[in-house]
Structure formats: structure tokens, C-alpha cells
Length: 162
Image 1: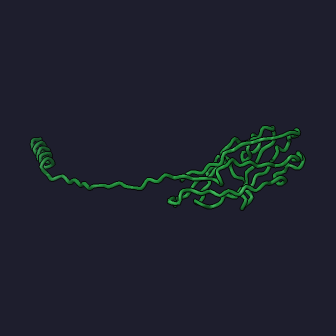
Image 2 (image 1 turned 180 degrees about the vertical axis):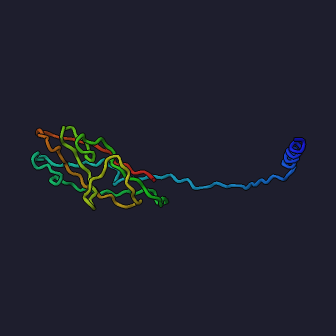
Image 3 (image 1 turned 120 degrees about the vertical axis):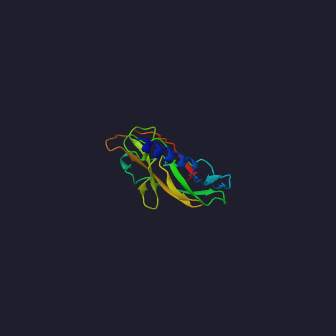
């Protein structure tokens, strides 16, 4: 017992007097701040007019398709990627269609290169100074009987750094 006690004391004393190993290094952090300014087209509101004679029976996701070519440009000193999104409220019958003031009628945004729907409120990767080519087309709920009259919808096109 006394031997065990002495061994324990000896180990504790050796820990107190043994050199401890420490390491340290300096660290420098740096970067460059830029004021990123981006614009879509000529920065004016985009007005898409489907016309005065949109026949309700012809609304099928193909008739009345409108091209919306947009140029997106940010500061020349920015070489990073951007996120592009169409922000708006989705219709109740199609999540990729923008709600309108007419129940059963929506406006669908399509990627013009593939003619595939653009999901609302989803960020898509985009290169600075490239164009964004969209199509928009009215669609209707399969069971909808659309009334005559004017319709409207609104969305926001958003560009932001990744």
C-alpha cells in the first residue's frame, strides 16, 4: 500500500515537472470589399401583354407564348456567379405557375433554351453579364371554366451573388 502511494506521488510529481508542449502561430485575415451593383435589362419594369383576344379555350401552355430575353449585368469587377430567381406567389393548381387575379388561370415561366418550367422562388445559377432567356405562357387548371375579362399577375426578377 505504501509502495502504491509512493508510485502515485512520483507519477504526479513527474507530470508537474515534465515539459509541456505548446504551439502557436500568427494568423492574418484579408480580402477586398466591392460594391456590387447589378441590373436586369434597362432597369425599367417589364410589361408583358398577351393581347386583347386571349381565347380561354386555347390556353394550353403553348398558345400565347411570349419571349422575355433579359440581359443581366453586374459590376465589371465581379467575377463570381449569381443566383437568378423569379419571385412570386404560385397558383394553387400548378406550383411553377404564377397566380393571377382570375381563379384557375396562371402564368408559367419557362427556360427558353429547354422550354422547361422555372420553379418560382428557386435560385438558379447564372454567370455575370450573360442573358437570361425566358418564355412566359398562360396556363389554366384542367377543370377551370375561365370567365371573360382582363387578367393580371406580378412577379419580381431577382439577381443576387452566390
